[in-house]
Length: 640
Image 1 (cartoon, rainbow, N blue to C red):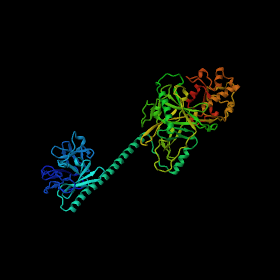
Image 2: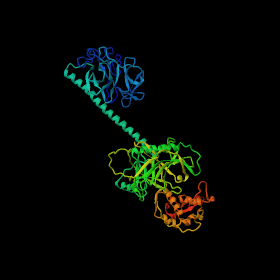
Image 3: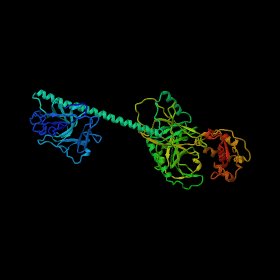
Image 4: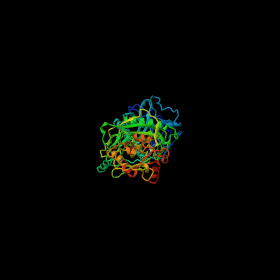
């Protein structure tokens, strides 16, 4: 028969007389090769066919495209030279040897066979290989893999190796060690040296095949892993693109220097990529990324707060000028910064958490969304003592919109940092947030061995975080959410192949600390008579003198001090009735005439002549006017 290398062969051992298919004895009625008392004894003393030296063995090589019909379906030799059924390549693990009903044993997919017993041993205890159809190997046309065997060779793998006109059986242990080689078919030489040489060649052919097979398996596994990695990378890039995540750039020393300068600049608003962690960013003082332990219990407090507030039925009736919500966390400065211009923990301007915590299981957040309706929204407040806290308010109650925008960062080529620009809103200027794209924090990927320089965000310390003892739903004045500004962005998760949504609440500029400046103006009787006209009434000179140079944690704290100083001035204090004198003594704004009231807005308000969104000075008294609510609303309608 014509032999072809590097293709899949097959033979039928002991087939019908003269059938000439695959591997066969031309006298199919002969005893099965390997039968008899010495056929597979491994001593080389038998010829494998009871002494009949006239048996002729043929070996037909099957090429890609050839096929064999079986009761279970067609076996096809594929383009790589491997046998396959239903498009599945057959291996030792997924296929079995079974009788096809014509005394031929064929290899078919095990999944197609039901209740088929395994092959058994021969009459004399030796394993019979009669009628077995097996397949030669690509690149090894003289080797046939018969697979795992039972009978007296139980626990071993059997291979057939052709040397000249002889067929040898080679048994191999599961660990790959060759156990025995004996003649299965043909006539051995009478010369002992020649016999040993043929047997050595037989097992060596199997040994080379097994090594090539192992190498091929290694290469196939490497190729499989490489293909999986390629597909995973394609999927990752598609997911990141949908979420608006940019891969971290390659940094040069010059780019790192520019990035570090930007991150450490005065007034910088900075966030890190900190998977699974929470972040607190302070004005010009860097970012605090929580430890894993701190993130755990802080997240628990935020989740409880969001669940409690989110459980309030949307549309619940609430008093005019109020919203419903709850306090969840407080930031306490350490004693280190007491008395300084910037007290740690008193100037938090960003707080970032996993958006899933704020969603409280009530809304789905998916990459590609441009806005998300959240059950709660958060804001950072500052009290008179300078203590800041994180609070949640229920959306859909008291006019609080549920819509939170999703922002996609833009890469700054000079620094390699990502930027998010918050749009200007009434009373709040446009602001830019810098994001360091290098992963950081306890859950960030471990060091990969790349020692290239990368930017480092300033690390903030000196702030303690405490959670609420219990979540108590209460009312907040509606004006606390007047400057509500928050957003969602996406970042890589801890695996760096998935993504996680981050909810960021931004402190209003009104809640940033500052020092009072300005001279004020001379006023007389009827100081507030012009509060309903033009730019309102000015800050009196004597009040400006009392406040100038004083530092306040927030504009709310300044407002309280302003009215208290007015109450202490006899010339100004006498201009108010008893009720309003009590109000201003307690730091509360006095009531305006009924004609100047609008809904729940019933007190005098402080207006920034040059709006904060246009970089108007927050604590400059010469940039302030005292107005009635009606005039304040009208002047904003006029764009002033």
